[in-house]
Length: 179
Image (cartoon, rainbow, N blue to C red; front, side, top):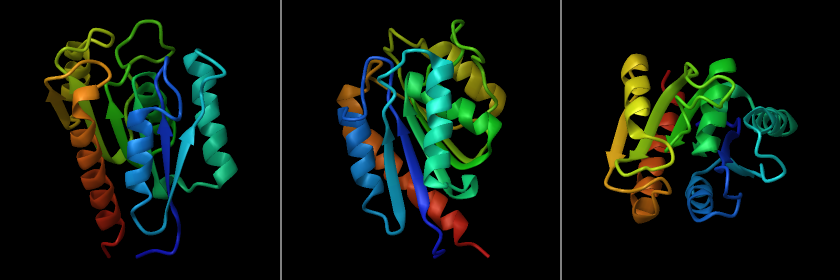
């Protein structure tokens, strides 16, 4: 195991906050792993995607996070923030929940996700971010996607999301420990 800390940055959705149920559950799970520092980025000061993207960049810089030892996880607009961040700076992992991808009002609506490990979880009944364009983007980029019988907030699936996130972190850590 490397002594370099693994930073996990969690990015909440448009109408949510860093204290939301999913973000806090995922943060708590990340913190069960040794040598992981989890950060719930607070984006509530702006609803602008570009501003939130800059906030993520600043959070990573302030922590001195090495992208090769960084996992990004985000929900809805936070998913877009993580996807766009990874398109500019390849990271270890990018875990996206109902990500606001393929949305016209975003500066770059279909970023090329550059992470060694990627995962999307979406709800079939999402009435905020339609699942079809996200499925299409996942197909085009060869991204793993899990679609659950749930809505945009994935509120019926929090346990499953946390379990999937735990497995995702474990995969990222195992990959780092390979010679």
